[in-house]
Length: 290
Image (tube, rainbow, N blue to C red):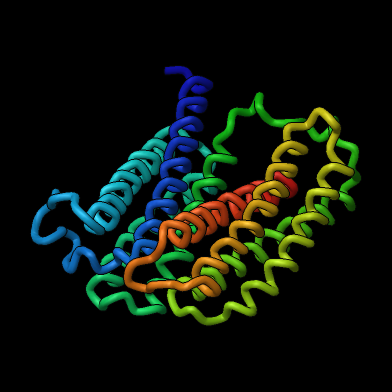
């Protein structure tokens, strides 16, 4: 296999693993929304089996474990392939970091069950999932084929402008990461709701500034204009999903043991779309650095 073809296949495989990780985050959100975290009392097996009857909340909890196991195996394969075909030491280290993160995530997932969902561990489990997602986005970004990159000559910004855009998107990504941490705190403790709502407005404003900076600096035909616009769309959708989740879990009658369909859908979609907001913002920060 020639180097160009192997690089292209490695990029596509990394993209697939990243997509599977987003699915894993969505599955984790459904576990929390269905209050299914303790539907299976043991770990790593489920009721002493590798494939228990998929009934009730066992479907959500064990289904999440199955996806998590698949992502862990895929990440291991990706890491091995990167060590074999990638020459840059920094990218090889990034692959090891992703593998370490998914193993740590599995351990935290087990601890949430063993210690009966302690909030600190559950919050750590949620935010590490977002960190792992970002590591895979970074790995996929740096594995992308050379002919897919836009040369600096096609851009309209000076080195000073590039530095400003990069610093801005780093701030945006950090703000979104903090917002997801606050969201996980709300999900697992029902505390910090006011901080979470207030910070959402600040995040929206920062994303607006970042999108405008990209559109002012990149050529009209640049694909990064589209990605920046997508980040803005995800952020607006996230805001309204947050309103829905707030109404269904804080305002309308809410049964913590048997959540309504609206509460499950809005809360899960809010968490998953939050990963998309973080992912696109982090991707734009990486692009702005080049």
